[in-house]
Amino acid sequence: MQSPGSFGPGTQLPPLAGSAPRSPPDGATRNLTSREKRTFKEKLLTMVQDAELQEQQALREAQTQDKKSLSIGMLMEGRPQAFVDFFYLTHTNGGAASTSGVQRYEEEELPQESLLLLKAQLAKADAASREGHTEEVFGSYKALAKYFAQLGRLRKAEFFFKQALHTARDAGWITGELDANLALGVVYEELQDIQSAIACYERRLELASENMLSADMETAYQNLTNVYLGQAENQEVDNDTPGALDSYTKCLNAAERAGNSQVRAKAHYRMGMLHYQQQRWHDAMYHLRKFTEEGAAALGDKVAEGVAFTTLAQCLREVGDADGAVASLEQYLETMQRGQEQSGPAIACCSLGNLYYDQGDYARAVTYFEKFFEIARTLSDRRILDTARFNLGVARGAMRMSKYMDLVNTDLPRLILWKNSRAEF
Image (tube, rainbow, N blue to C red; front, side, top):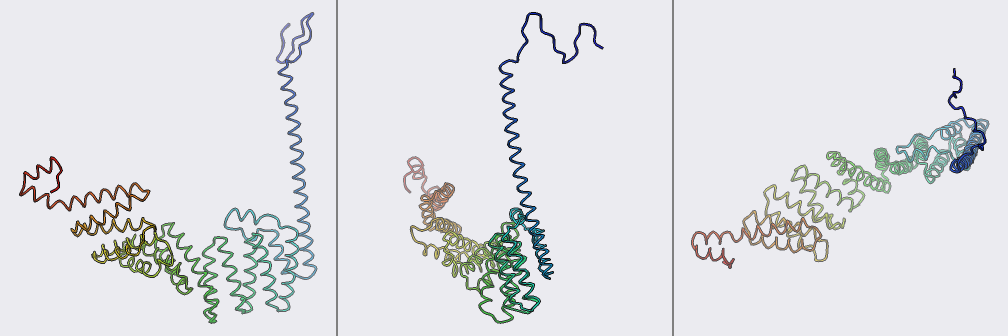
């Protein structure tokens, strides 16, 4: 209850006698106008968004109506299998893809022309199936698979290539099964499903071998070469050394059958390096020799060639064959020419210097360390240059040590002269 003469919250005081009613300040008027303008823009934007949503909804309803009418039409035509496939493909994403980007794209609605083509080809396949025309059924499924592959709908392409494969397999049609396995393998490679791709190519190879189809065998080996190589590289990145070695072995066998000298060389190189990391010296030497003797030229990688020769020399050194290590490195240096990649020769000269140093042949060690130092000066690698400078200094000191010790033991005045003036002794 309010007391006389008091005012509650929000109560406006009456104007004083003789005073004019108060109006809002100019700033308040501008703020009010600004709020009105923003409100109008927001309303307009909301209206535009609502219109777009209504348009999208209308389009979805039209597409749904089209799918319904096409589905009903297939049932009325007596095409139950066509209806089942059509319903599955237009009301699901056809088997969610392995990657989110592909999955989102697969979930998009099919355009009208795709629906019409899908209905026509499914009806054609259904009719041909009833009449026992295997090749026509296969052709319809294959045409749809290629169509969806071109659209980037790889899961739908996978579905139809599988349908084609089942059709050929059930009919015992070898040519169709070979074709479908090849196509499915390619689709799985695009989906980065390497295991499924390998299964398709291996089945294709099995069929071709059983039926003595040399051309198909060669194609299967080439496909397997690529997928085995990709699998091995992925396993190597994941530090799965046993798995990588197993995949490289399969890759090597397939590459030899396919006549792929580059992949064969790469497999030998990587297997040699993996065995070296595991300290399996003899296995490493076998593959590195294969690479240096047969594959280095085919691969054309001068850096890998240099690493292979120096690693091979290290393996020989580990098993006590110092002379073999020296011969391997000198052979490599003889094949290299000036102007080519020089990091390999630099490492080879360093390795030779170390070998001769360990054997006590300091003169030869100095010779190769000097070459190492000269090459290192041309490389943009300060770490290599520092190593070369240090090695050369140590080797020169070791080479002069015997003379120095002779002075210490037999000619003290000359030693003092050398210490004062650094005169040659």
